[in-house]
Length: 288
Image (cartoon, rainbow, N blue to C red):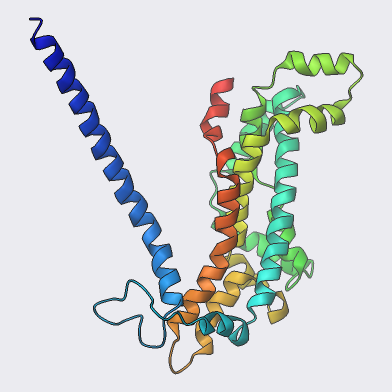
């Protein structure tokens, strides 16, 4: 009995080690599958004409063709699209964070008539696909004469029902005693929001910022409807029209180069903010 006990413990350790190895191998395979498209895009952007479709495929580039990246700026209005997308995305993201935090704070910490019904209506709007409201919003934009303007690209996306919901769920966890103590010290509503609620809500704000940034940076359908002149082209529009620059022979290396350049800001945003990217979407609901 005594001799069998160490053997049993040893077997358990071996099983745990084997399970850990299998799990890590599974995760490595998943990571490789996720990263491979990005790797292939970078490698293909540095290939010369005719090298992308060679068989067997070239997994590495011995002589990178940096001219492909120069061609991106020469053949398209990439710079204009990049600047326009940066402006629209930054403004939309900042205002979405502000309005979502203000709405979430009001729903979480203030008792006013109709609060439950209003919040329920807000949740109901999240069930409506965006494509359903696209035509009505477009008709409003046409009526007020905002077609082919920055206002049409920015203002319809300044508020987010999901953002208000996310911030409300998180701010429910802010202790009421802390707010009451601040009120006793003479703090008003604006001071409570700016100096207490907002700094304490950094994790969900970062999460919402990442979601909002990605959605606006990659938005193509709305600019296609609104934009008429090249001066207002966003980056997805510039990428879509890049293929038309090659009527006879599509230079896929240049397209890959442009796609990689357009991906860099999203990668930077995610890597810079990933330590804040936590499970706050569900975590806020558990605080109540």
